[in-house]
Image: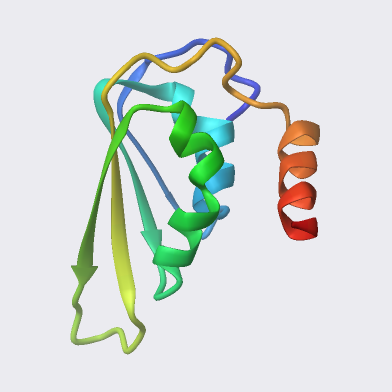
Length: 110
């Protein structure tokens, strides 16, 4: 994702079991068009992941919605996270992987 330098290309960017919310925002939110949405399938830890994503969320202007994913065939607590882009992605996005790793290490130390 972070190799793609073009910005604001897709109406919808989705992922399942790729990475946490913070990593997805830092590496892939630049691909979402203005007023487009990143859609992530997450687990019961979604609130914690959103809290840990405060760094990129403070840099981005986005609207967050969470919906329950209820399926009779799945006995897990799944949620769908919708992150709507409300302004163009800042110039320093996407972050290279080495920067994402630094940010995550710094958070673990604090």
